[in-house]
Amino acid sequence: MKNKNIFNGFIAALCVMSLSSCLKNKNEQPDFSATTPVVEIPVGSPVGDGSVNSLTTSLIQQDAASDYFFYINYAASSTKATDIKVTLSIDPTALAAYNAAHTSDPALTQVPSNAFTMQTTITIPANQRRVQVPVKFVSTALNPAIGYGLPVTITDASGEVISKKFGSVVVKVAVRNRYDGKYSFKGYVFREGDPVLSGNFKGLTKDLPSNGATAVDFGQVWSNGGGVGGIDGLTINVNPTTNKVTMKSTANATLINDPAYDSRYDPATKTFYISFKWGVSPSSRSATDTLTYVSIR
Image (cartoon, rainbow, N blue to C red; front, top):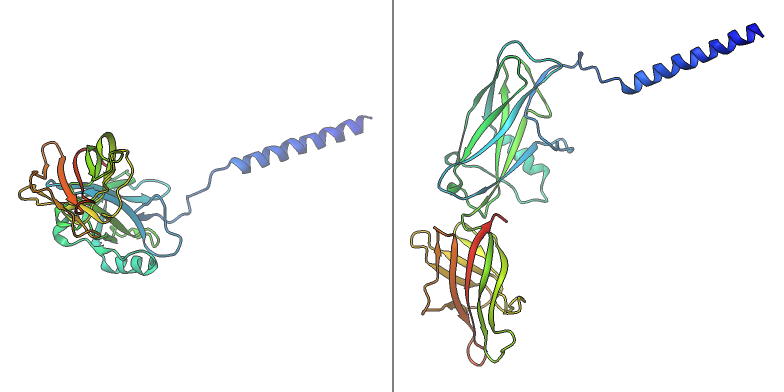
């Protein structure tokens, strides 16, 4: 009996040791001590197709420069005791590689040199891992009808290894003109011979997306809030010098501004005051609207 108890105790000890070992292995953290340190441009969602990683920003056209930044990172098990001077370049080959790997999307155009400023040397301070790279975009030098890309590559890092997968990035830049946004929407619409769809409306909101540098797409409604047909391709076009507005429809050549009304944009309140008409009697139509900026869309 004594030997049996000793044997059972020995088995229990082995189980405890085995369980302890299993638990230790399950919770053990990866050992990065043997990993080669690299300097990189980190991104939230790396590409899996072997091409160039990307970051995205959306700009609204404004007179002042638009601030943006991305990071340079020192990926290592510990920080370095000395500064790391990183050299960057604008790399058209990186943009070409990105476009070649994304042929189902419209090709990105490289951001022109007059539309941004960026430091080409940046320092990761001693005992730190990462640093911001500031970029200033001149949004007025960019066309909202074009998708842009700013290709950046690390060319030197004070002798440190540059990451192969994260050594380059394409910053995708979408531009919205200064009139783009979500607007409160009220007005009066007239449909000859139809007292139901004619009348005032208010309390609506309307998204006005960019259509080039000085126009936004627009959709008119009837008094019940339903969409108006026959005037597809309707745009609000602004003269940026005078702030006068011209209404146009690609589907209806009869649509014109109401000559008795001052259709305009008020930049102080970000409000459109527009009036236009289309069709001829007995099927004449007209609308007079007020749209006031609420927020980005």
